[in-house]
Image 1 (cartoon, rainbow, N blue to C red):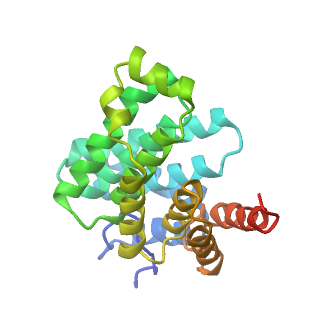
Image 2 (cartoon, rainbow, N blue to C red):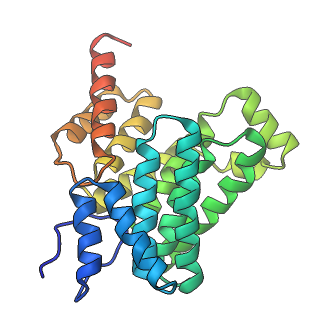
Length: 250
């Protein structure tokens, strides 16, 4: 059976396993729930199935991004983390397990209180950098580190003060810079130019720095690229909205 045509998704190709081929096929058909159900059935049958765990983490993360309520998002991200953590426990040297763990934990960090942000951000930073030690050209790890810088930089003054002076986050706050945010996001786009998410987050990075022309170019790229992952329609809708705001001079 031939493999589904996946873009970068932090997973190795499938060879000789029709059950994993089905999981991937459901995912690229944009049915994250069915993909998760199929992957979860595999890990229930074999608790050492690393390939199934990383695919379950991928699908749960996609469902979290699609969820409307913060409580639902957090529940999905925690589930994705648990699958990613299990994959890392099975094999801590395989970058894809580390990547999905960092991606899920990074998304959850954005939903937590300032008290939890510093410790979680540190964990995400460590895991993403570990991925780059193992694979310097991993586009997903660069994307995570770009977003890591971005999110720390847009904290409010009160949040930054609280994080730096009351929670011991001074060093992690200080190391976040716009050049680093941009460098990592540009790297992710160069290494995986077909990834809608990476272009979207590079656009946000440009926009926040006032680089409107560069931001618009990336938002337009988001709209032009074919959908490959379940969250892609969300990034396209947000990009369309951003372009409309630009046209109104906002």
